[in-house]
Length: 323
Image (cartoon, rainbow, N blue to C red):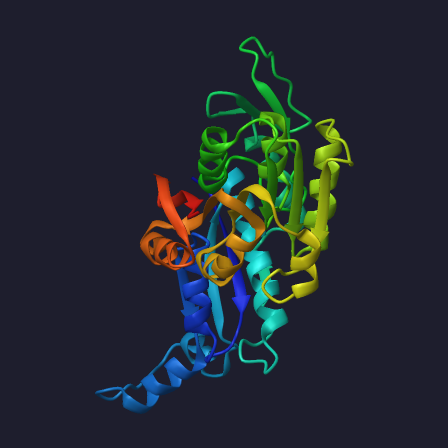
């Protein structure tokens, strides 16, 4: 597999927290370059050194950098989108500048070129028993009468190639009943709520903190011939925006939320208010190491686990609201 190397510019204070957040979005290979570590080495080293390489001495005044490695495939493209979203959220909340400039720089490749190259990996994909996900530029001979979910992710998460999305859609197929009202929190490309509509939902509301994702979800809904009367999009953060929570209202049959562990934990107290009694909740975007922690937080807010599923280090959970 080919990999793309990318640098994230941060600070000494922010590096450890940043690395923990990187692991939550599935990036487990990274290296840290930090001037404070080198200066500590110079002060505390044992023995006498007659010569230190100039490249090594260059670390003395370097900007703290976390270097990550992104696979050159469709999942890597989604990983890059998740990474950029995470950095934006972190930057927006960093009022004191603790995390430095939080800028991302791909090495030896233009970002727009890399973002287009991965399209060659995005092929029609069967998910569950009924859905077929494909980009608009690919043809598919639908001899098995699948429901065709056409998705062009643009710069929003959700092509169906990522394990978290596939797990969510598989659980959604099991949980959904005809005529259900669906709330998609952290909608990205809109793939989950659009999939729900194709599977028989009567109405869906899709929410994301990124305006670009909301626009992309709306465009993808139109590509799948879903009426604007039954598909509604909203931009905002339900954790901070009480007005948005009130606008979304209640009485939903199903919530799907494919985000990351910390955000799911932060939302855990809000899920119940959106749902009908015994409403269903599908959560994903959880690395398996944090599955129990997330389940704990959500079950404490009035939910029971119905089923969980895992794939390649990721977990999704299907829960039901206690009556």
